[in-house]
Length: 277
Image 1 (cartoon, rainbow, N blue to C red):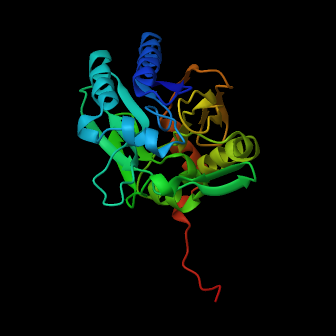
Image 2: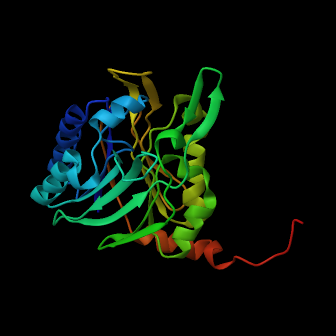
């Protein structure tokens, strides 16, 4: 299954980001991809809550979702929209960070709201409080497809191995990790965590990423690590996109999952135990 990781440098302008995504998705399809994946917050990278309130839309009204559904149908491909920042009806006004799996019919086949919020102090100069603006999801999601069952995650979820193990034990053969990783944590942990999740589960890990410095009309400009990656079920890095926006193609081999799990059947070896107190 020819698969494309779409690496982007999204700004805080959803219309411009849509054109960037559409151009790269079309390029991926023209090069034979039947499955394409975009990064986290494909539609808007912004640190300004006021700007987000001005430009974000609900799922039913979001122009990026509508356009990319049409694009998937026109091209006849599967498309993982890594995530979109969306308005919700929550009383506190927080947004959703929502990943979508779109089929070649243009329909939404699965949606997943990021569970773990990135509330961290990377350094004195770099702090994040994702939960101030985004509400966490509370449901793990599997999505069956003709080329394998997908377990959906987003970015900071990568650090929570229990989620990945639960998805794999429930049948996930492909684990998606669209991301906008910080340069500091990306350099230190990105590759190691992606390989660990693949090795622990015997699944493909596909991680399309944001990259570079993200133009902002309001608020602090963000930078992200890039290095979209595909990791095979045995832990080999099949692709690393580096730091430029673009399309990275891989061939997704479903049988590799069965081979890895046959060699190390650790998903069948969980045991109950006591402690610590």
